[in-house]
Image (cartoon, rainbow, N blue to C red; front, top):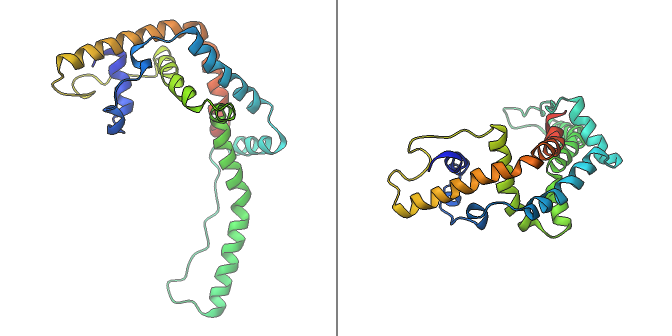
Length: 207
């Protein structure tokens, strides 16, 4: 596999089962305006929400910003290296309860911030289009990554089968052509998509 199709194969090396899956229609068919319109119909309201969230979600976002995306939690109570006495056991239980109470709100904020960082998934779920959104998001975001120069080719035979068959070579050639067509096609929407995705991703970065 060469070019963009080869670059995208790097993402599959961590999941061999996925790498062996048959190509989807988006691997073999270029994106259409209807695909992009559908994708943006989910991404736009997701980004709009996290820019004007409710009070609880605003607190979670503020917490991540205050901690620059990397909150520091206190160390948990230390356990004795011997069988505790009843008094020590009671003290340990109280210390652990106090610790759990102390980290409960930060944990809730971090969990919610992670959900908000992928709030497009929630919007898709609310509209009952999760599978359709997942299917179209992959080629669109792959095209955006290639457009932005965020995907590098793995080169050599590290991308896939060492001795591909003629059928595999033909498939890769087709996928490569589709991937290149998608990069060119996505250009009119690239700036907006990059900006909207940044709105979501920046939550976990505390930005």
